[in-house]
Image (cartoon, rainbow, N blue to C red):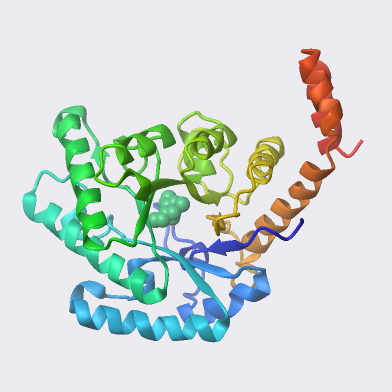
Length: 344
Ligand code: XLS
Ligand code: MG
């Protein structure tokens, strides 16, 4: 059974190391070079922001964008790589300063919708029907700046427009409670699934769970996964780790809390995550201190940690765990799990 999982990451996960307080510390790696490294790192799938796939897309016509995406598709085919999803990047343009779909400015909202349609075109050209929405700036810095009822109406409307634009796409919403905003409108997976229910085609709206985003909401990522699995809405995961309530760290999977990571792998394995083609995404960032030639280790390490935890998941004495649960001896169950993680 081991090996049933397939792994993916985005080009942004190999990055120059800039943070809000300092400039880049590593050289830019061209997309072509990054793509050549995927298989060596143990990955078969690529996640894209729309402009990772087609840089400077705002300067191009819709037809030009599709043509560029088709060229990229050939490169992917040549490398034996598959595009997992495309996500419109709606947080860098001057027209998305106050959000995209929930901006108070109708022209800015229109930009967000048009940009999302181009992202859908790119996904189509790359051979994937999965669109991810990380709703980065769909929220507020102060409560009074937007009307939260209207914001949700506008988000649902935007989803409907995208679903209508292409009847094949599925949209996976990536919840996150804060950063860059003080509060976002889709902070948890319950919110993501809930807003899908307001759309014209509930069956085509699901979610992607990022471990760090759940932790930032004060939630356990594996519980969020269980919630989404029960709704049959877990269409991707962004595994990583996070050391408490601070900025989004995107640390190597399992590097802060091994037990929390173990439980994520456990629930994914228990419910056959991947059986419908879902990928295991690792949305991790290298430490700023890492030198150029070793700035992709966080990716291969995260994958290796996942696979080692998978071994632990599959070698756990489940019968003993069940017995302790039936006896309600959770102290002994706690020790069983800890001993297993300590391999003693
Ligand atoms: C940022 C998000 C981003 C999404 C894709 O925190 O995790 O990387 O996964 O837009
Ligand atoms: Mg992510």
